[in-house]
Length: 379
Picture 1 (tube, rainbow, N blue to C red):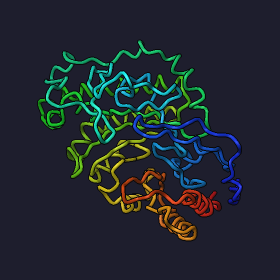
Picture 2: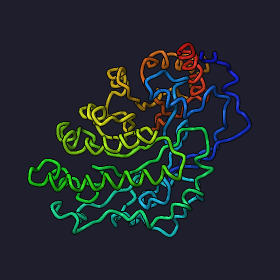
Picture 3: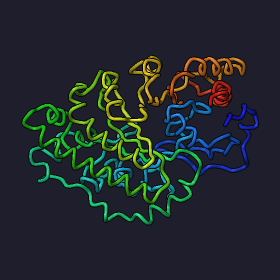
Picture 4: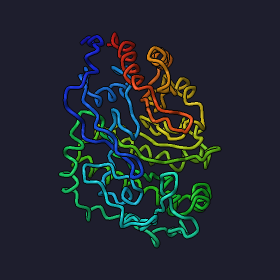
């Protein structure tokens, strides 16, 4: 069936609005986004891209809204402790909490930082000896959670035609770091005597994550999962690609395989200078990659280098500021689309910095228009 030709009326609101999207506790509340006269739904467009075909337009992502709805329900106590509650419930009242919140999952203290995230304070690891980790921690009991209330609370929030994505803040490596401290966690991945015990923990935690995802999928309308891993710091990876392939990739692949078997995409969220580990994503069967620190690497070159992989890259739109003229913004959008139309990208309009006054108000619409024109003759 031939695709419809681009019609400017696609950008006209239908008069309806989506439920309010995700907002961090320290961010201003996002405005309601109007529904548009799109030729297919945003969720269908992303799934089309993931299947290896051209999308109808460049999908948009990021915490601030777009075609992806972040879902981090309060049924997960880590989301409360980390100020990352993205769900259909009322605004969470943090007035009775201090800078440190203890999560019921693994009884970890999460301390709020000035940059907006939360972390455990090093020096008193929950697992001082990985060879006997069961003596120190146990997996949370998911049977004690109120799943029916979670389902009811999120019917409207997850009732749109956008791509609903369950977010999990602590993946395999991030959980190991939180429980052991960074240096000891890294040693646990490479010390031959410790590896069997580290595998035992990662295997058990992987099963827990899959069980959590399964329970959410059974009661909520989600099409994808994103898990934070952060295998690198600002200057490079915490470990080699060989170590990642041996110690972490098998468990990531199990989660990815579970997602695929249940009709979901899997995204790995990876900050830090992680370019040396990118082949591990393909080995694990991951569908998408996103990060918060694009200045640490040349995202544009990475996207072009791997354009033939069936893999979706999240990239930040170029800094087309509100100070540009309308014709300059339109030209910038056309140039951007032409440069990356042969790549598989989800575009984020979340560029920050004191030297950037904000995006031109029409730039996002122009990217939609030119990407629709670029892809409208595809099968």
